Image (tube, rainbow, N blue to C red):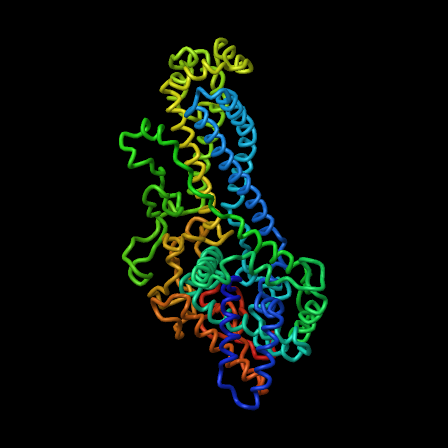
Amino acid sequence: MIDARTHVVALSHQIDSLAAAPVHPRLGAARDQLVADCADHRAYARLGALLDQVLHHAASDGAEVDLLAEASAMWAEGVALYAEVGRIRGEIESALVDPSDPRSPSRFCDATLSFRQLMDNAKGTFTEMDSLGKRLRKMSHIPRHPRQQDEPLSQWGWGDVFLARRTDALARAAFGEAGTPETRAMAFGILSGYSTNVHGSTYLTQVVGGPRRSHRFRDRIARNSVGSWFGERYPDVRSCRGIAESLRFTGVPDGTLPGEAIDFITRTLGATYDLSQLTAVPDLGRGYERLITQLELLDTFAQPPTPALPAPRFITKMFSDPAHPPQSPTTPETATPAYAHGPGVVPTTFSGGPGFGAGQKRPPTATDSTADSESACGSFCLAVLAFLAFAGLLGGPCWGEWADGRSCTFWEKHVAENWRNAFTIDLSQEEKDALAAQNQPLTTSNFATAAGVPQMDELVAQLFDLQVRLWEALGKASAFLSGCGLIYPEGRLEFPLYRQFLAVPNDTVQPHRPELDDVRTFYRYPQTELENPVDFSARVPVGANPGRFLAVAVSDCVQRWEEIADGSPGLKNLDLDADRGVAHPCWSTVGSIDDDPVGVDILAYPDQ
């Protein structure tokens, strides 16, 4: 199944190609009318192209969209935390730059009190993040395929039925049921989705090493990578929220499907399938709502700007060479774009090799697994939280000594320790008294003296480092979410985990059977035995990128429309997951999917 961005790009190209195609004169008027219908009713055309997504969401339990919403809310909290640290930094630095200003002492104190509030909020945020990470690392939001579970067709969800049965017949039924400009536009969208899935899934099975049912995690990462690839090249689909807006309809409550659309899809499904042999048609309106929600949420994970550097005065004291300010302490797990003040990193995820795209970079290792990345992020977040806990004390225990121009013994005693130990610090009575003394107003004289203590420069440096680490924590979170297949890998296509899916490898024999521990091994090309009978059919050439299948899908869609418009009979329903190779007819399993060889029954055109 192809992602939403790819479907929308393909539909646009297919409409343009149809408009310019030298069709037979007897088809010219129908062609021109159809092109006009698609232009006038873009939402209907795009809804048709994304019918596979609507049916998938309608038949699901909604768990993935719920996880995405939860992740989006936590991301917003993380960005707010990052912004608040930046604001507090600015207040503290401004106060220290001009300590003689009568407003500086209260400014500094207000900022330290803000840190205490931040500490309380951060504890809950990181606890929630840890819970979400543990759930996501199981990858249970990507369900198993019913065929791989040997489930009978009568128990399949409609998202899978749509891709595996009566596919050509459904496209033809859509044109047969279409009687208005809106439904004609939707019918062409359904045909567009048919051609794009046929050829796009052929590409996916090659870069993945087998079909979606066998390698669901690799397939998800691959299709998201392809979607990001098209998003980088076609600005019209870069905004997922923009796609969602283009799917909204006038004359109905916001976020709902028009009755005409629901009625048309229901009639088309009824004209295509024997509904008595399948599960009940799901709630199409709910599937549409979930699709809109997913598209809108996908745009909420934008990385904020890098932290502002400290004031020049502190840069001069913090670094021996002010011309070379600090760099982000990146790690292989960070997987974020290059930091503004230094080079990025080359993560350890797979980036190709012979037959896997340009470059001769080594294969992936287990450090790319979701579980390992999550564990690293977890310990990292604890360190950040510990510093926040310590920072909440800064206004108290040290002020008595700082006001006298002396170094703070509390600072020297505790800052040198691991940040994580800040959770278990036992304050002496003297330190507790000093902390309580923060409630007393600071004089301008005392603050001016304290501002000259070298530890204040260190404080500025630590706060800057904290914000840098929070910025990187957001990058880590985004990398983790894209590595789980929950969001697009925006800005990461050159990283090995995703790059491997952007060029066809030289493994010409497929499909590979599923990995036993696919959660930990999906980052690499399958190393399992082949599922017999193997597929030797012609396919996308080695080294080809996603643009290759798009071009084929465009010409194929126009040709199929001409055949339908000309009254030519349907001859073959193609498996839209490319489950048994390119242009393979819909099929059913004879016996078990685990048999060797797998029993394959090619279905006749009228069969389900």
